[in-house]
Length: 248
Image (cartoon, rainbow, N blue to C red):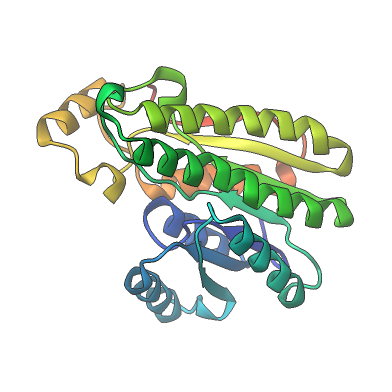
């Protein structure tokens, strides 16, 4: 699965699963535009690590909020000048959590999660599709979660956003199939990232015990699944959700 001469956009692409996805595409020869919201230090540290590995020349960073429609539009307008051949792959990976039981959840926390995880995916995909339709080729991958299917206590906003991503991806896949654009989801289970690092140790132990493989996954294992769905070889896979959950 080579991505040489392809341009890839990875949102939330400088930390955790996103960083692993960005690095995996770089290692396969792609030019990657990795976005982040506000953590300049983490983004710079990631860029430095890529440079030290000899991958920095094909990496570009851009800081903005995917929930901000105008900022997203500016990003794609500028990208058109930098990538005259278009963008071949979009990975919608940006995501946040603001956990609370629904009765105590603030309207602000509800909106923040929906706006970033779901609406941000709509913003990015809208402009990606406009680009990909002109070239009659494209791959869009949403990084979603089993939470959208199972639901977890205290994560009503997160579960709703992730279920929404799957519905959006399935609908979009039908709209763009005639232009040889595929739209799929990768659904990671419990992965060793900072997104779960703040959970109590008892909760982590319970979650680990619930996984048939009896361990948490790695960001690199998620990245492998994303690479497959983004590849030319996956041309007949669309509207699908690939679970990377250890058997949940």
